[in-house]
Amino acid sequence: MAARIIDGKTTAAGLLAELKEKVEAFGKTGRTPGLAVVLVGNDPASAVYVRAKARQTVEAGMRSFEHRLPEDVSQDQLMRLVETLNHDFAVDGILVQLPLPPHIDAAALLSAVDPAKDVDGFHPINAGRLATGDARALTPCTPLGCIHLLKCVEADLTGAHALVIGRSNIVGKPLGQLLLGENCTVTIAHSRTRDVAELCRAADIVIAATGQPEMVRGDWIKRGALVIDVGIHRIAANNGHRVIGDVAFDEVRDRAGAITPVPGGVGPMTIAYLLQNTLKAARQRSG
Ligand code: GUN
Image (cartoon, rainbow, N blue to C red; front, side, top):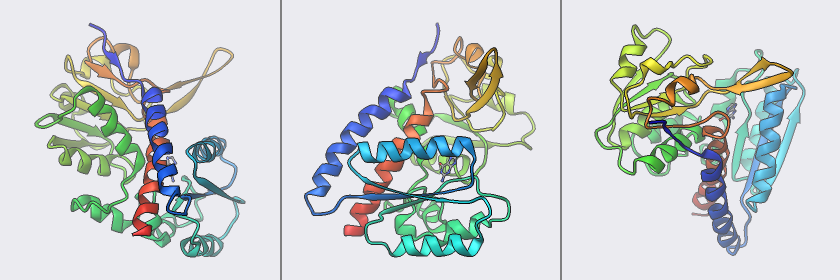
């Protein structure tokens, strides 16, 4: 039987509608949550994401502040901007769009963001809070979106064997923590893992964040498994381009129990959770 297609677009729209009501209720306390986005350089994909974030921030009833800086901006200038945003009362969330140019020390910059405003959840304090199960943690948005989509299919993930393919600080590692929190048995595979296909065949849940187009093949998937595809790759196709993921969708859909499409799966959920994190930061800052 063909897999259920997990509709991230509709799920995210529902989350945003709920969020809008919560933002309105929060507004009655006299404040509107604000999200500042810092974009460096002219990467077209980043510009598209930042525009989508700004539009949805305003649609959710929040304030959006955009800071665009040239490719050759210095580390000092960026550090000063982050300091200014840290001290700006109207700013509840700060997001520095990645990737940054190679002359910028991204880790130093991300560590300069006030952890209370770190809506990406990239600051070491938030990573530590997530790892220790501290409810104040601001948690990376893509992993939160993945868990939400899994729970749309299976409300209780207890005991499932989850395989995460990818060990980035943005997706793989925090996702491992969240899956542990859901009582899964977690394996994290990566580019040096010996036989990822074999690990995959034993998994009830597969989350692909490999950065490799269509790496996960149909014969890697146990029948009925839940498959979440975090990848997004634009590839040239007749007369334009096509967007594909880290999973060979047409092969996997015949074996999986449920699968996220690309586009329209994890992507829209990431923005929904970014805005959710902004409201959480605003509430926590209001104490
Ligand atoms: N670039 C691609 N994904 C992300 C993300 O989740 N956060 C930030 N800041 N930059 C990104």
